[in-house]
Image (cartoon, rainbow, N blue to C red; front, side, top):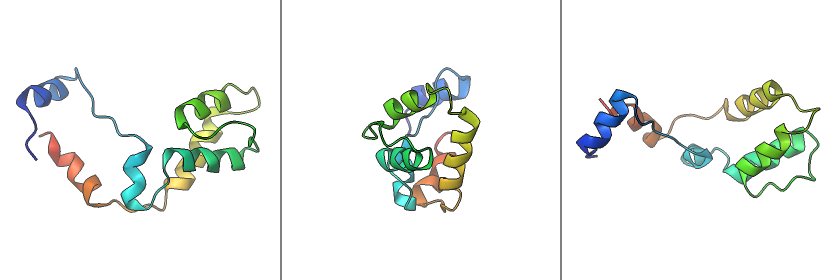
Length: 97
């Protein structure tokens, strides 16, 4: 894959970062964003929160006084722990050298 030099320079200088969303786990048979939101809603007993958008769901979930951020992070780790990297995950560290 040919990465534009300008983008490489920005990443290497720390002026830009690579970002992956929940969809990055799909090829590794991981959950989509809405599937992850559903799993969290089930775990925390919050089926009243719309799970269609993971970011919005997380904002609402974490605004609840009885929900602890560390507990949410631990549940996400538990959900993702068994995933094995797919080909795309193995390529990512080599993109910017």
